[in-house]
Image (tube, rainbow, N blue to C red; front, side, top):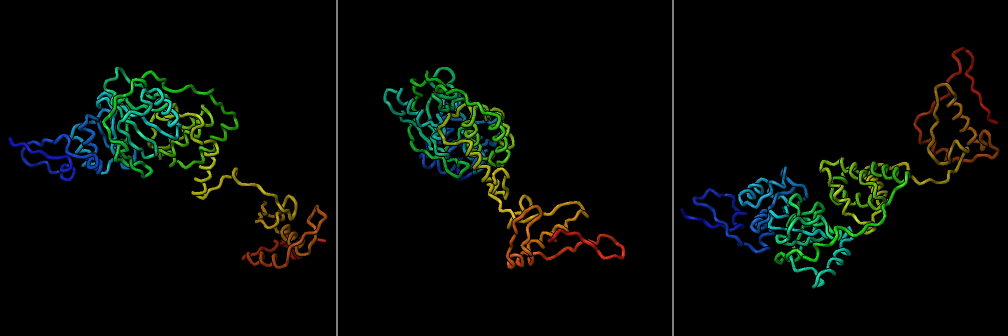
Length: 402
């Protein structure tokens, strides 16, 4: 039977595989630039190198497949089927022994990882990061790809405080995927994968941490109030979700449960994810504090047209009638029927017009005639005092106007 040889870029442009004869895929037909021109071409390129891939939601990190750690594949026909169904899907990689020993170090500057990577580099004989595949992530950090196929036994989840993804239950967002913030993952250094540095194998998972920060009762209540004021959509966005966790961690080590509970509002919540991220946070390396939560809460409420009473700034009141009526403010006269509200309102109006003191005070009140006329004109209806009785006698009102 005659064999046909088809390049990946031809497969990318054509889905017709019905021509007679089996399809033979040329193993390395594309340059990196050609492979990164489209997610499906990139997925095939990774798969050819033995890495298991799976589709992610468009401009997201969430997998499209259930049980994706097991379903991830390097099979060409399977990958073509996925990207035919979801042509704009992001590309996810599953590291580990079943992916040619792929191990990826996630260097996140927001967690202080630039300082930590310097400490790890100092342990290497060359005093520099090995020449290897390096990716700039959508959030501004970078991924270092290593070949850990020669390492005996499982690698830890972190080295020197930097997250290490070498477990076949983890997901790596790979180029040319688009981050939720709209920034693309790009290749900064397209070098062959370097062997995982042996000097790093005995480094502790994380540097020693300072004593735990315990929050007092007032702070606990304040944090609960602030989390309740945050827009729930912050829990759906990876960056804002992560920042809330980092701010809570900076306040106290005891707020993991609060972060997990708040995160549970999002359909993206997964059990154990908050705890895993929490362990990777370092203190005082990102500038996020309790004040960050206050600012985000205020921002979300203002965007929604709400203002929290606790955030209203107080100011000195200019009393017209001390403790009862403030000058230049909208007032309400509230009470049960037939208790003298109309009489009181007329009494106050008469005193204002005459400049007479209010009840219980000695100083005269004053309001300009023009101001009074302007305010009166703003009201469209007036109520007259209700008769004291329905008898034939004249209606009577009591007043202490002098």
